[in-house]
Amino acid sequence: MRSDLMKKGLERAPHRSLFKAMGYTDEEIARPIIGVVNSANEIIPGHIHLDLITADVKAGIRMAGGTPVEFPVIGVCDGIAMNHAGMKYSLASRELIADSIEIMATAHPFDALVFIPNCDKIVPGMLMAALRLNIPSIFISGGPMLAGRLQGRAVDLISVFEGVGAVKARKITSSELQQLEDCACPGCGSCSGMYTANSMNCVTEALGLGLPGHGTIPAVLAARHRLAKQAGMKIMDLLRKNVRPRDIATLAAFKNAIAVDMALGCSTNTVLHIPAVAHEAGIKLDLDLFNKISEKTPNLCKLSPAGPHHIEDLDAAGGIQAVMKVISKLGVISEKAMTVNGKTVAANLKATRVLNEEVIRPLAKPYSKQGGIAVLRGNLAPDGAVVKQSAVAEAMQVNEGRARVFDSEDKAITAILGGKIKPGDIVVIRYEGPKGGPGMREMLSPTSAIVGMGLDKSVALLTDGRFSGGTQGAAIGHISPEAAEGGTIALVKEGDIIAIDIPAKKLTLKVDNAELEKRRISLKAWTPAITTGYLARYAKMVTSASTGAVFKD
Image 1 (tube, rainbow, N blue to C red):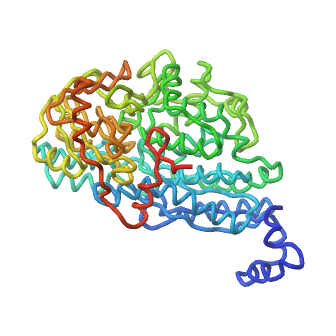
Image 2: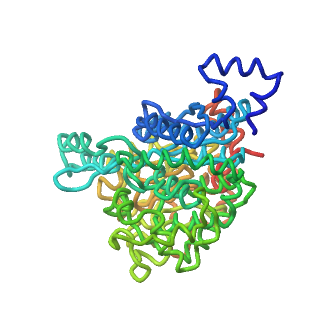
Image 3: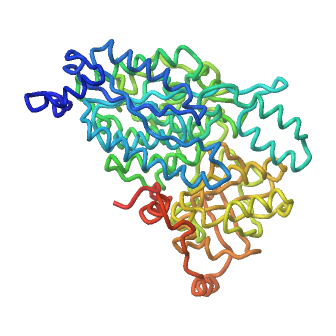
């Protein structure tokens, strides 16, 4: 066993003594030592209950003959970190999470690992660690939050963000916003729509590293606890058979995950995270692959913010397995791919069926013939930009407008809420990329303000930053190269005409090359906003959004 390095033989008597100091018996020490990576904390609603999930996992491990050893990792709540300096640390935390797990699982050579994430950057950070370490691993998330209810309608966190803009536009009162605030997030779990957390948990299941149900079973259901016990038991099977993450997360499995991403209409953040996870497995995923798969994969689901349904509805309709069953008929799913339950995708899908065709539409009735995400290119984004096309109004799919340019998210929000943005404007927010931010902040507040003020069908927003999975409207992010690297977005001036053509995958700044070269010559060199601490180091090491914002090799 891998753990023999720290527990077996005469020379390891001191090591065993330290285990015994913590109450471990000789029998426990002799068994396989299973690391349980618990991301529980008291600042993320999706993680507030993870100690309960962890207890279930540990029970499953013990039932199957292993000894669980729990250790923690950090986690940032993107919602609470939103719209202030804290958001600069969200994406940057992904690398810290992966690195810290590598440290813990190498300093203490566990035989296998069970990962317990739930929200935002914790999921991809753990996936990156699993692929990097490549020892038997399984994932079990904490599950999604239920949607809230207000006056007979479903509401969620995004309803509250959009409510801020609605108050500013005098569409609702501050007391109505208070009512919404009180009921939008009714309890534990990852926020209830197809936002980044749930997107990545669904991707994990599609990738084969989580058991069926991993991505969609609500946090408050007993089924989530049963699944956690099953994950604890299943890790012992994976260990016995020496099945490792890279045996499961092959190129074919990543293509499966992207196809499911497109069918669901997941967060644009998946285009950052999936390549970053693949990178740890030595697999290069070009951004154009997302478009190629999107062209073959229709958008079958519209979950909040793109539509009326929530993750609990998707679960009741058959979940990720049902979505995979439908799109497998198109040849976009590799059914031979293996999964952590020891079965192929084909075997898992055999008894699966769609239980609600309003939530998971049939192939004959898709929301759109292409997937939920599109990668755009053009002189404004030669290395690519990303848009959640399933959440863009028809009127905004092809659009031209004049640029309103802001060098930070904060300045843009002030202008939007101050009524300075008019129909036909295209808001450009720059110097918010991985390097320039630093940290590539989510732009949920400005996009929600635009929606709340009723401008989402007439105003587009472009940025080298990124968006929440809760963003809707013509919000185009990840523009690469970013402004801090001298990308074209740094050359945009107030009043320039920008053309957006999502069906054609084009993003064009309508300024001739001679003028752009003139502007480039006079462009002031970028200076970092933060020069000390982790973010300063992060800015020096991080690569472009087009490569997943991973660290330089």
